[in-house]
Length: 294
Image (cartoon, rainbow, N blue to C red; front, top):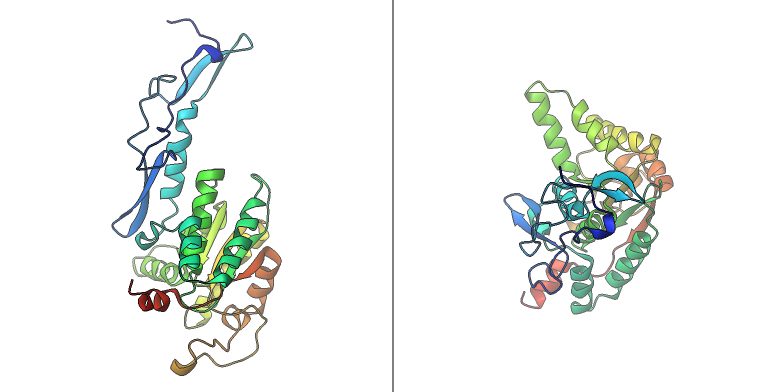
């Protein structure tokens, strides 16, 4: 058995190439893979000489034998966390940089302001603390989901946070499928309750059946009671229930209903207590891009 060496005498842990054109020295690449976005360790990251590829280092620290996870595992660990988030494939390129570049290219100062506020929120993140969440609101097509996923990406790769993304109508479909196959909804709801950061896309979407309202109440109540960070997007403006009728085809860009109308006052009140609200304004990104011939 080889004698242990002082930690300072061991080779450096494997690190990405500083000028890699594929990962730009991040050490990971994110791509669309089927229905989902997936990350992988970049090919520029070499085999680790420090741990010999085992992921664990044994060394002397102040003369005392110690064992710990090798620093080379930082990137693979975060890649694994990201891949558990279940982010749709269409958002493989969703970053803060692409959002800001798009906002500037389209001449959309309101989107730039929203991104700056979201980045300020991100800058206040403190690992291990129960901070406030964030809800991005605005009309259809303003880039809310892009910005939300860009924040998730930063949380995973910069702060090693465990995150989960779920589009609300997909959650409902998943639960219905489970019921039809005789499965309980408990495992799904338990996962959403316990993940470090949960991001819910399209809050308020649905037919407002009693069951749908019960599902969102259950998810938000569990997160609220455990002081867990919750992020979201919604096409509905913040506000308590007004009793307004749902929008018709001619009013689709006006959204007369509030978020309170869509999720109920109890859920809305808890969201207000749990999260900051940021408006993502400006024009419809899809229409603006079409006007530019893209």
